[in-house]
Image (cartoon, rainbow, N blue to C red):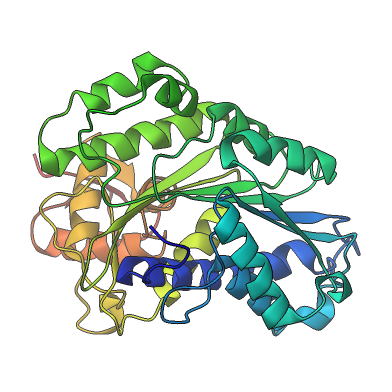
Length: 369
């Protein structure tokens, strides 16, 4: 691969997701609390596989659009940006791409020293250099968003994820390319040991031979690794573009606010290009584009119905409990989707209401006997 490469449809859709998420993330972390008057003293974004800053046909790479959307955010006047308070860290291993990234940022933003944020553009390796950089910049003890968006094998040790997970108000996004889950003769077990936390954790995934199941098993295995590292909540999902190959993402956060912000970003991604987000737990449902069918025909998405049925197979629950499960355990569904899904399933005989009265969030429901 040369210095620049073509922007694939799934990558473009992923960038739209990042943009929507960061549009919410920055003001949450940087605005002064109206209730307490508290302002966080430092916030750090780490893009550990930064790339050259631009694609073959001129589209901006992640460092460029991340900085551009921050500086032009609708709430920027209330975020009190300063180089001491806001750090953007970009790591790129390839020397030619690193130089190209520096040039792109200078071309777009002029003198980087004059910006109202601090940019750290490091030539280095995501796996070995992320933690030392965060230490040198005084990031620990303050919120960090780590984006580990690799083209090849993700070589970031689980110890790095563990350190970020234990840091207050911090999150990670890890991306796997379309070919990462293929069975490879050059599989490096020592690297995978560091990424997944030991051989016993990843060898069952590598033993899966069914092509359509490998990505599910590997993705769930990495999600489990983030859980063990200390992230209370983890989302796993497949980003399916209208054309081209999919991408696979795992998101780790310690708060339900982070879950909601990421899922809201998914629902806000424009569906004109036909992308969708698929939950690895579902096999029979065909993913729809990001159109809320509840506002159209009043019919729930097949994926949602399949997931609710999976939850009820574990035992009866209230509609509210199912909504909480949808938030914490599924790729894109929110608590508000629970009631209408249960209502439709009850009408179709797929769910039985176990408590009397009208169907509400407090109603107990289960699978039919």
